[in-house]
Image (cartoon, rainbow, N blue to C red; front, side):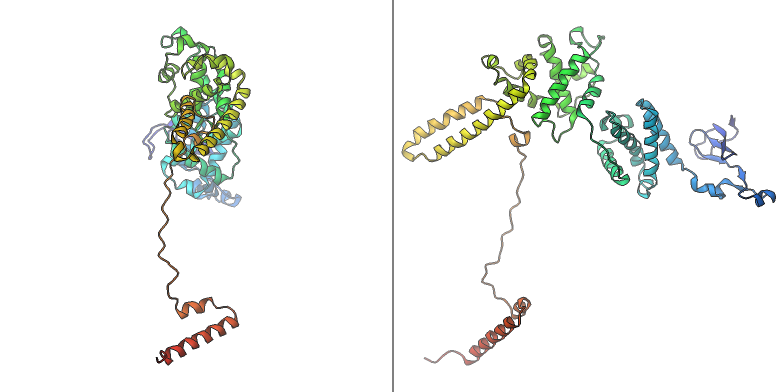
Length: 421
């Protein structure tokens, strides 16, 4: 029952009687501050002599939890309930929070880092139980900065010595696509844009696997790739009605944020699909572009393993042919300049008409690295070496004797002077 008075810390009047270690205490229900403490006896002799001490002066003081830690534990439990996690997850996350809070570096950290610590413990627990949860979702719920969160996450994993597996891409696709608002008709989603969830999820998984096999996922954030793959899957299921819809409008209809690099990942996926379409006989005569190739995504995915292998072989042969032609062009004489130019112009036109080779993005567009110029050496090798410096390099007694004889001969030559004419 609420008691009278106010909390000295937060000023709340919600004071309740709490039986802590069988002692009656008055506690603020808002901030957890202990307003009044009960009394207890530590030994039978003290109890017989009525020597009562307060709880804060007893041995129980070492087990007292601070207000900051109490607030953090409450936020861990609240976050687990918001995410509807099992109770075992909640207990594990609370245990990780208590372990991390024992370290002095965490206790003395800023408030922003302590707030982020709550999400880190929950994310670690979900990763260890293969529960699909992204770092971005936690940051959105906590209004936390992603850079601060990722730094704290890595620090806690290293500090506690935990083994945290990486997130399964297929599980992330299922969780992320389930949040799209495109599976039921609504005033904001026209009927022609509504799609069956299972069909869309199945095709999205195939496109994400294709992106993984062609190095579009390696070293990159997965959500932009999944967003681009989901958009193409959604378009390809009813291309006649959806080809005019842009990626930005698709995200607005699905009620999800548009990741910044998603447009670039979309163009890379379309380039891979065009390269695969060149290997199908019935698509070679259609002269497909990045818009029309969406209609045939189903056929391309059905034979994707064979088409990727053929595209790899063709790309390797094309690279070798280009090197061979360049070597022939460099060997042409000046008298055959006209013939040489014509032989080099043909593959140039052919290369510009065909899509990019099926290679990793880091090889298609290598980053520009500025190589620092090496410092110019002023040492020529003709500099005079002092006797003291030479003595530092003498090691054996024979070297010392030879050096002394050479030094004496030089002194004798200097004293005798030049020979008379």
